[in-house]
Image (cartoon, rainbow, N blue to C red; front, side, top):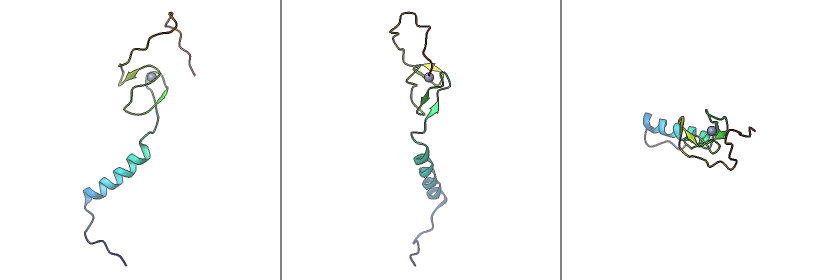
Length: 72
Ligand SMILES: [Zn+2]
C-alpha cells in the first residue's frame, strides 16, 4: 500500500480544499444588486455598468430619452 511520506499540514489541506471551492464557484454568476442582471463576481455589470454600488462605466444612450430601460 502506498503511504504518504509526509504528514499533510493543516495549511496544505486548507489550500487544497479552498482550491476545490474556487474551482466550484469561479464563473458562478450572481445577480447584480442594482439591476438584477446576472454577472460574474468581481466584474462590472454589463447591463448597468456598476461595480460595488458605484457607476464605473457610463453607457451612451442610443435613445435620447434615457429613462426607458427594457427589462428582461
Ligand atoms: Zn447591473
